[in-house]
Length: 157
Image (cartoon, rainbow, N blue to C red):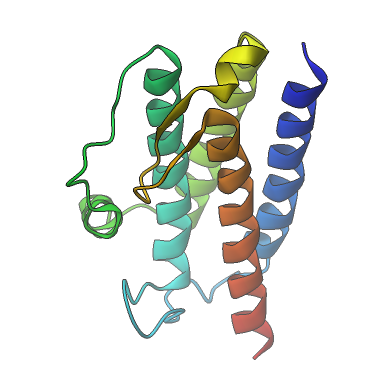
């Protein structure tokens, strides 16, 4: 395995540890409104989003790695996020966390199989910019760290 893949895996693992520490602090406050604009999610809904985002980006990266272009120019990430959370409205935080563990395990195992040079392949990210696949992975780690900070800020506020 290449040094870059090891670094990407490390970034994902570190971000996940930070995220799980934040989620662990939610306790019985899962139905508190976290965001007041945009998706206007509760802490529980954010946790669901994090799981569904993980599953979604893994799917996108794997298809892009295989040479496909999975994100169309008219793809709306906000609509996807909103609808996916709505479709899983009954999921608990514990179920989302279990799914996060399962998805990340599969993600890291897949990364063990990738050819480093193919991570330089440029493809359309769900945010609509065209970036190399290794940056998709870095963004996933950043996404988790940012939401973990939001959770911690809310719980401390």
